[in-house]
Image 1 (cartoon, rainbow, N blue to C red):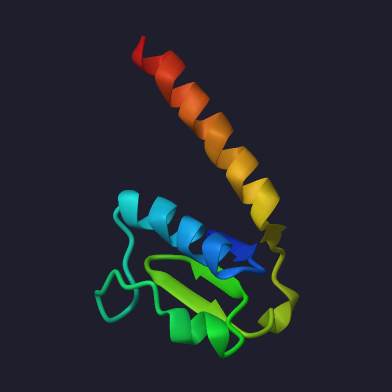
Image 2: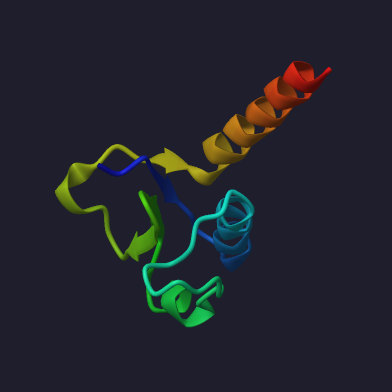
Length: 87
């Protein structure tokens, strides 16, 4: 089951989402941690996180997705909560 689907519209957003997931220990299915700019340029706009990272040009099966801005907001909240827990 997919944990999260993020819709991105720029290469900067694409790289930002990947940065977060790489820091959390996730990889592409082939085990790499590349940014695959060609994939984005060829239409990959939905990043999927499950046991590994995948992408799609569209959102198959109408899976619920979040926009990049919501993803970043969630990350900021998660970081605040982890800082509070570590105090």
